[in-house]
Image (tube, rainbow, N blue to C red; front, side):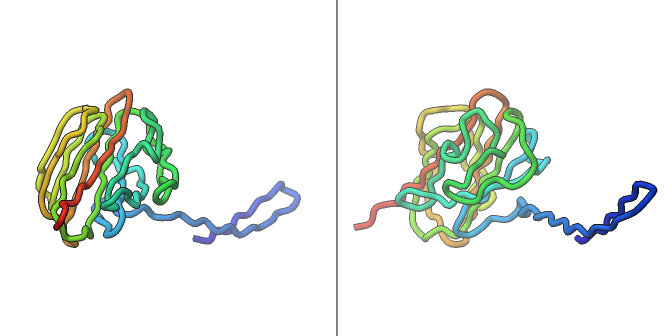
Length: 178
């Protein structure tokens, strides 16, 4: 949007034209193909959308991610850097009492085990909109789900942070074929 601003000191006036650009945030209902969108919310109810960053994925499957490579344990997701995707875009978040939703589609058709290596605080996993796993804070690796993913499968990880440390580490282990 272009605005014209007029200033005056009662003796003279001056006009200036200013272009103001505001980048809109991605709609948090979108499941992107080929990358993870990490949608960030103030509060733990996934209702006050503050911003997002993208996660390209890593590891043998190309779908793994760890928040620890993007922002420090115990800090706010709005500190996410551009190490493995786009940096955070949106409002500054608090370091406690927030939630995140990691969404993706477009998987190579295969059988996978989804392993949660670390979650702080609570995590819930959804496959095609159905809840398949949930647990409170835990630092021990666990297989959260195993099954077939494909190009049309949607996967969502919801992370809720109350206070203290924070983060999520997820791995997708493809089945071996012979």
